[in-house]
Length: 202
Image (cartoon, rainbow, N blue to C red; front, side):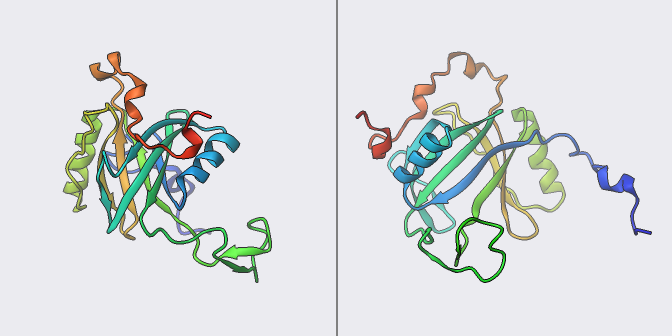
């Protein structure tokens, strides 16, 4: 007999139950943005929807300087964010012969220093949900940032915090009911004035 009931396996507890609406975006750290664009756009078929660089969006993330940050539409409202930073380490060549677990990934070598995801951003429907979650996290002793807005380009607004393991998390919303979306021009999301070769006219 187990120490818990089957009901406890499916039950969501607390006032936050049902408020998260899936994944807003996943952010991956990449070494080469041009190669990454050619892979995610040309091979996997994702559509590029946003570009920014250190010149028009200076951000320092946990001690690393951002060089380029491109977003792709994954479908169903979710985005894939690729972040190229200075001194990023790890590549396909940074590997060693596989000893165990070769059935997990193709090839005969495994990454010596596996590249991890930068952060996971959960999605909520509205600004009001964002306010609720920030107050909810604070009430539960979680250190959280202020609500970060991006009014200059009608992009997501976000809060950032860590889980108990130190894993960086974000809650974000496009707040699609906001009147700003009525006159939104997707062209305003392309801020990189020196895009990678894969995006230049041939």
